[in-house]
Amino acid sequence: MPPVNLPTSAIPVRHSSSRVRHTRLRIRMMRGEWHSDMRRHILESVGPIRAKAWGPVMLSACPFRDLSQAVSVLYDRDPEVSHRDDTVSALQVARRWRDMQARAAMQAGQVWTESLNECGRMLHVDPESGRMRLRVVTPDLLDGRSHPSRPGKPVEIREWCYRQVDGSWQWVQEVWNVEDESAPFFAVLSMDGDELTGRIEGAVDGWPDVYRFADGRPFLPWSLTHSVAEPPALFSPWHRIEAVDGTMVAARNSALIDHSQTHAAWPQRCVANMQPAGMQSQEGTDGSPVSVVVSDPTSIISWQAVEEGVQPMQWQWSTAAPIGEMQDVYERRLAMLAQSWGLSPSDLVRQSDDPRSGVALSLSRAGVREVQMRRAPVYRPHDERLAAMTAAAMNRLDGGSRPESGYRVAYALLPLSVGEQAQIERETLALLDRGLLSPAEARARILGESVQTAAAALQGITNARTEEV
Picture 1 (tube, rainbow, N blue to C red):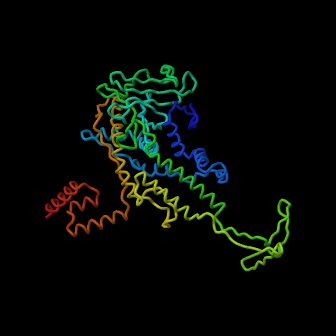
Picture 2: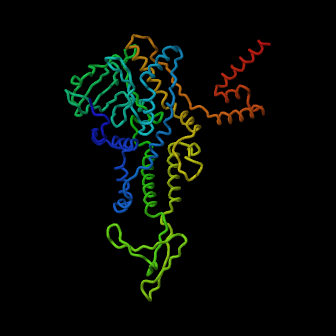
Picture 3: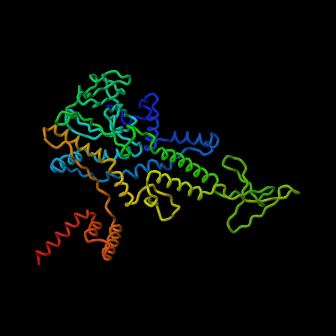
């Protein structure tokens, strides 16, 4: 069996691939493995002397990870699959998704897509058992070529995998290509490009029939999801880089706040040519002499000059680090990062009513619904294509005749809370009483229906009452 959770350092790096290196930085931030990156950033920012004085790096917050997870709410519930002409087939596809636990993979894929800007999803069909699963692959392990007229749509995908070759495990390239639909091919290559397909256990020679439509056309069993609807290229690794840089700066500021709180968060009292009267000598734990003065809040400490003829002095410095102000600046930076991600400040949830309690980069229920509505058009084409691929693979396996296109995917929005629903009802009924809404519009607002559906329902209620009379 191959090793589980291979470390990032074990994954081969292609030559001159700044895309891969930057993507792996983001992956380390998502996994909490960016101590060395943060240590290097602090060292470059403040120099070796101050960096050493600050002490060990503490990753107390990662806004980049928090923002990625906060907006990944599209698959909190199972998406609904439908087909205009074949409801039974749509239910079968939805059932197959549940059986293969596709929603968990979709949810993980959205987190990686939002953080890395791309993520590969592969419909894997076991050639022996016919079992399906949705594989999620981060883009540092992918390469490929895009369609000439659609730069975000791949026609070839290369995945760097750890496979067993002649009994030993090594890194290989799995190549899936449908650029020429009349001659699709799958191949396994070494890192140097040598052919290894025949030496891989279980590798298919030629294009797998399970990845063909009913008319014989091959389809790429991959979908490369993007964080934007129309990506400018197959890979856009530096999109939202301001959130990565901002997280580094925020973590550096957090380290400074921790250092200041530990070493400079109290007034410093000083004396010159003075010592407390009545000091007693004791022996310390290491045997050295220690002078102490026993005191409590009700005692008065008298002082005496150490050297005659020299003016004794006593003073106090104020706190060197204004922790409250530093923390306020830190929280403002977090809010700015959220706005750069397209989130409204009003949608951010605080941990308590205290405005200085710290901004938790999570969303209110209204904010979650807003994000769901904005992200749905980005992911829906990929999920509808996945539904078509699933139906086609099922047909090849059991000889069925399910439609292999025309599927529609809808996402369940987060329901309103009791307080939100009551507020909408009060506002809607007030507008209805003033004649600013029709009964159909009022019903649509309260129940979340379309105006046409609400009008038809009201007409049905009217007809039923008329028949009763």
